[in-house]
Figure 1 (cartoon, rainbow, N blue to C red):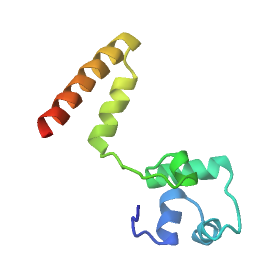
Figure 2 (cartoon, rainbow, N blue to C red):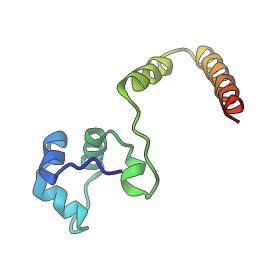
Figure 3 (spheres, helix red, strand yellow):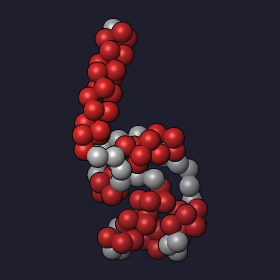
Length: 97
């Protein structure tokens, strides 16, 4: 993922000095968990993504809002939504074949 942000840009988004961001990038310093969380939040990525080579799919705000709304529901409702969603996804994949 390349957001084309400067160290100063990341610093502004996260509240962390851009020079410190550079030290993290060059492995001259390691961020604390709290600092890593701030970076992840600012970049809209997970902490896992910051420490792995995995690919990232940034979710749009509308999708994130829906997931947050679902997460607040009782478990039974969540299970029903995910069951329905799983079936819709399967149907869409089959249709694409």
